[in-house]
Length: 83
Image (cartoon, rainbow, N blue to C red; front, top):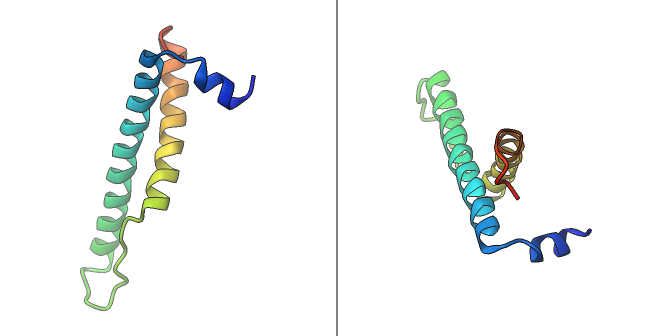
């Protein structure tokens, strides 16, 4: 079964569960990236010559996808309701 057929075969509850897992992944991703930026700023002692990093959407969603994939695997092994 292809990815498109699998997504079309899901119910509304399944879509909601997958969306919730991805949104949790986005939250974890944002927290991780903000923590890494704060760690870098602390290591550079907030020097005015340090590189100013920011969270871009590409890295946010790539990291969120990885977090949601890991979270999905964990929840799938624990519970039966995962699609």
